[in-house]
Image 1: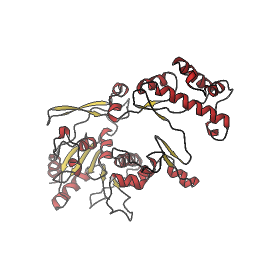
Image 2: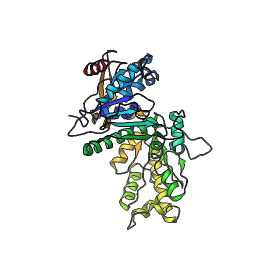
Image 3: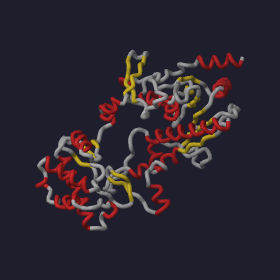
Image 4: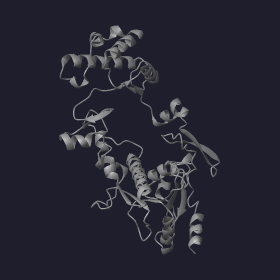
Length: 400
């Protein structure tokens, strides 16, 4: 039995609803996505499987709706509104891009509204896109380069929708826990703008607490003071992030050994500072960089040593050897490279999902968590348009 077995979720398909619904489906809830007769707008969004444009081949639709069921309802008609009301009456949670509608609510119902600025915002009716949400919420400010004459950039992958979905699922789960204790449902009002803003690392807090403006840095955390670069181009042309600098004397000794093993000691004139750090009685205090000359010289030499080592090795080899020697580091992988990584595969993240309508089985990304007591099985493929309309007929018969 999965964590949310027996819970029915009605998702009225909207701009920011799919990910929250998908997360609850992954936890075992029955999620019924309600679409207009022509289909959710997400079905028409590219790319498409095999470039075959159709309502059931959008990869965006697949990614947000795997494991769900689909019914079509015309909410511009009284019949459609009544059908939705019957569906909601037997449900535990509603996910929608608006607040509760009609007389469909019952005391134990949890209604999660996922909207750009919150239900009561004066901006509630403004049109938005992923770009405007991320720009207005703060994440775009954090992303870019040390050279601030270059414009900031938006992270790909519809991050505003993903953030909204995460907070939608969190809100729904907290409300379920409350209902378990009290029997009462409630309205959960999720603001996508706020979800983006609280996902800006420490940027918002630095402004609120210290009145400091954090600025973007290439491949590093935005901060109000510059930090040293951490990414380096490796021997194979790929990039690696060199991670956190050594702090403790044994770590500096390990770094010296690595340089010697590669025959690089003589190529680093600053190696004397690494030797100095290896002989210290206490760790180097990274907070003193820029304020204490010895600390600055040691940590600069450490960064130069790591950069030199990485530049002489292929990125993945550098990553593996760094891990073996106790240094945190990582190769910079594209999403497809990360998906094909042997560690990801060994964890069972590759999930085969059969599409009988296409006569093919596709690999999907699985869940990022593993429950020992409640294992997550392979999900059903994303629903065809109106594939489960018989559910509406059953509900109509029950109320006849």
